[in-house]
Length: 430
Length: 179
Image 1 (tube, rainbow over the protein chains, first blue to last red):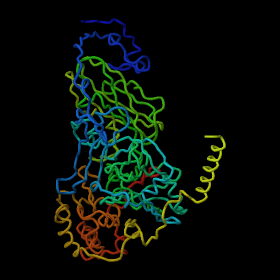
Image 2 (image 1 turned 90 degrees about the horizontal axis):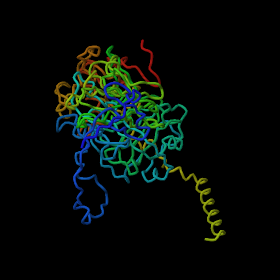
Image 3 (image 1 turned 30 degrees about the vertical axis):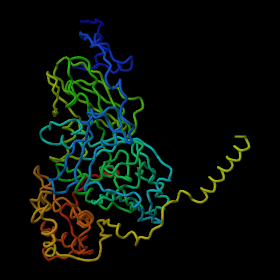
Image 4 (image 1 turned 90 degrees about the vertical axis):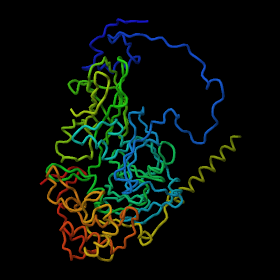
């Protein structure tokens, strides 16, 4: 049966070039009728509905810890060891499969990993957190003690400073959205205010910095300005999305510094030393610094820049039949709230504002969406986020301008996906 | 439950709460001495505070290097699968720049801190303090930053000037003005 609806498509519905539809459609009654977009649609007939086996017999027994459907077993973290086997085993990354997820919360089992010396197997009763240095009373806390403190809960992202590193390469790499931008996860964290614990230890007036250190074999350590803690938002997380933090995320506890580069959110946290100046650890000098063309390097670049990525359509999420689709993606900023996300379908010639929540969360992922009509035309899809400080996500060319070749940290450039007339999608630099 | 029972319960709860607060119930940290923290307090700043006693030379370091380090980092600190630690000095402005301990690291003390805390990869903490000084001396010597005969210890190591010591611009709390 063919039904061609003939509602006229007013210019108000066309938000920008190459098929972008106004977000106003989403604010009204939901999806626009296909006919209203000037498209003809063939209404297909469904088959007769049957009663499947699972509706006819009792199902499986209760489970003590639930798992995803076996039909979802391809929703996994792609892993990338950084060294050949036998050299630095356990050191590497795994990516959050962004294009396979919806909403904004990253499931705990899919939250990206970055380890510098594998995942330690920490017995919680033997773990200790020490706070010492420029304090009146050096203190040691057991996990049991920390669990008795008043808890703070907040949702924020953690993003590796090396996220999107593949887009720093000379040629665009053909990887999925998650394999390029998935060194980020967003979770509801619950734990203890670090300022609270520092007050208990009694911080000296000469204190200006902290050194945070993990209990893994790398004993990963970073210097942190005390402003992020005293009158700041730093806390020690014991729970992630309601359950105790998993081993690969720092069990039994990790530091959370909302909006700041991932490696400072020290996992397996065992020690906070209060000091008067940064100690210049390996991971704040030789790594996580940004080499410029002039040979100088930016250091202590903590806040993650304003950024967004379209997760659908994207490689692996190609359009099938021609017609209406929802362009959907994630936006965030280490500086605060995302205030605007714009989408282009014509490589940046024209832009339309995507729908985002009225109240976007600070330093947490925001989901954006915008309807798009794909009629087999080639297109270049891009998204561009703006945050509450007025910072706008840069083009790749503008982002790269000050940096030396291969500089990969704090890459927050606009991602472009080229859609071919057959619906194939590739990573392109525009 | 009668009203009077409820009232008693409320009174009991309030009393308990007051007692808990006056007893500093939230102060759950245990006091510890700095000496009891010694095995954990391994941070070393550019001023050398935290460097242990002991010493080592490049010649002594070569022995440790060949036994413990060269499989991953190359026979002379170059060409290993874990990346070069030697060479590249003066290349940072070039497109084919090479970042190594010698060409890029701003402080020699970071080298001691990192080797002692994290290396060798499969047995971190297994080197004696003298051996760490020796390996540090070896790498600095291979980079031609110190002489082959120089001895590194808690006094001499922080005095080593690294080639890229002035190569960093602090972005906290805001970008430094470049000179």
